Length: 251
Image (cartoon, rainbow, N blue to C red):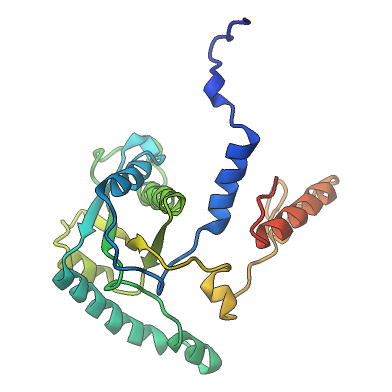
């Protein structure tokens, strides 16, 4: 048997089936609002998705996240009240047809989801000077968002739905959850088993927005830049997006 070269490990290889499963999971992920079931989420399942979140990349390896688990109905109700107030304010920011469509959207599942989870960012966790955050101070917040995405994809792999609720004032969530001043609420998530996952994002189905053409969002060597061989890549991008729109892995 041929020995492995230094630094090479067999487990770095991902076979075609595993690779396809990763892409399918990404394409099947949805923001869940109205499909939550009351069934409890098992502790081992919850532990797995939280572990996935904790293994997200973070600038300076500062791991700025913490997770505030909310199961108490009274706490959920306070969060729901904060959402209701902010949602009424948000509706007034749109006009005409958009306001009508907005008012008909279901934008949260706070009371229905068995688990609510606030992902936070402790901006002082690694001290005043952090590798990689010396010039872009928001890198710790971006790291916490990576934890959210890890959790979301892991939850989808478990058959769990996740809904991100962002329509409330951060100060309200900070007060309800007694967060220290240095700790920022990054994402308030509703998590649970669901009756079904939608085939397409709900806002796309509702006609709010359509997915933008990926080939028009790629620039070369600078904003608006093009390349002599750009045509081949753009063709591949269009083909991959067409497959993805049908829920098929772009492989």
